[in-house]
Amino acid sequence: MKKATGKSGVLYVARIGTGLANGQLLEERLGWAGLDLVQVQNLDARRVYFDEYFRSRADADRKMRELKLLFRQWLGAKSFSTQVRRVAVRDWSESWKKSFHTARVSRRIVIKPSWEKYRPHAGDCVIELDPGMSFGTGLHATTRACLGFIDQLAGRNVPHRSFLDAGCGSGVLAIAAAKLGFTGVVAVDNDPQAVKAATENCRRNGVSGIVKCMQADLLNFRTKSKFSVVAANMFESEHERFGRTLSSAVTADPPGYLLVAGVLFKQYSCVTRMYERMGFRKIQSVVQREWISGMMQKS
Image (cartoon, rainbow, N blue to C red; front, side, top):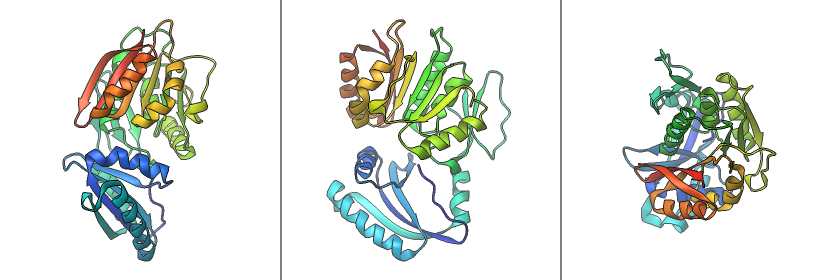
């Protein structure tokens, strides 16, 4: 999730809203079209919004006309809403603070924004994030599921305890793994801005010496050593594209774990069948609304 830029004054936001179930399809197609929009989810309203910010109303109106044409092709004219509105830069930056608060996402893991105070309980693993650095807060359903799996695995006697965060975004999964005792942690993303954000988040959380953040295309990603746990929180199409790379990154002896997330319920069986053909077996799954995430182990 990218943040808008601007030093002072006013911004104009072009916003398109649609049903939550359309979110993944649209994010994929926007990516194919080379369009980088801010995605905002309202789980209570079951809506997802795609925003882009501009210095002038004319630029916002022009982009809205372009987006309408694309969204009509993808969804049909009656499946989305549009809005161009004016927003103060200060209001935009402060709006994050109204929607992002400290939250416990697993038995031990707590996500805390940088501006809030929190007194940890015994055994808490507190991860501090600033959404101003973009790429998510760690509170999306699929990220929560992965964090829960990491918490579980950290409590087990997992040999080697190495970890790969494939498509790391903010780096929150890698940070959680490092704070819970994994070593040899690698966070990979193809987006240089994501790598920059993950690097800063690692520094903020004191795990820069444990987590190696690197820019790489997962299709060609190779390492000398394999990982006891690989987390892949990505779209169904990306699981299909990078599945072989992810599978080969997991240790076979002893059998390592693959965390499969970012997949809608109706797509999950296809994705897990693909990994089963690569030698994995299902261990556990978590369903949260339209999303399902799972833990698989090499057999």
